[in-house]
Length: 320
Image (tube, rainbow, N blue to C red):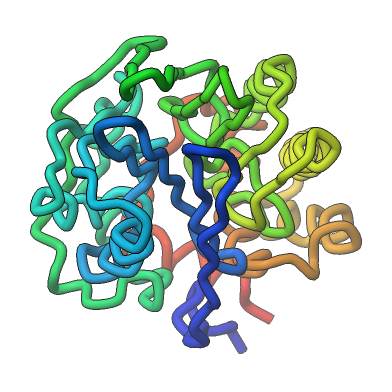
């Protein structure tokens, strides 16, 4: 028998936490569900990743409004995945002036945003509460190439693409004065890394670029906020181990001439002992192995996931 598709059976609500990291920075985390970040400057607010729907965004907005009435001027998209960006419409009424994304993220929305929206909603419906409130794709209003700097009053905010990993357009937000980093899904902790659209070979070098910044606090894409330099390094090490074990397993499988199903079974022998217990591992692994197998076979640009491809892959890899 096949397991239920993706995470359609995952219906339990997760507890959200709003944590102050510095005089200006906050982490909005949810027990392995996607995280968001908040920066409160002298004259406005920045939200980093919007949640999945406008209705879901209202809970984060309520946390913000409990501590400030400043307008939410900026929304930053760390990458293009629907679960991160489709709540953006909720911030228009809160004063949003700019939706900021990297060039790579914009290109991915153009190429596959519609397909991604449909496939993600099918995979994980709990993360798309009140899905009918989504007005459509979220499009950036400001696109940068490598790096841009905003001053929110006296607070310097750097928005940067330091390298590929989770996607080709990954964006981080860095507060150099306070050594606080918002990594998006480039870093995960106590949760599986979803790598279905990843650049796995490049990902470790990008992690080392983040390490070189010497952040003292880091908000990962999933998992708890990392609030000491030691915990930051632990998160970087954890993510590096996940993606390198995954790709090396796929390369071994390809070298042995294994089929995708055989590669999946082999990868489980390498991954399960270290990561089998963490959040969304069973959800992610079929998509992860499919992408790693493609990359090991020479497919550098990830194939587009559609709802149909999702289910075909799931049936093939999860069958008994």
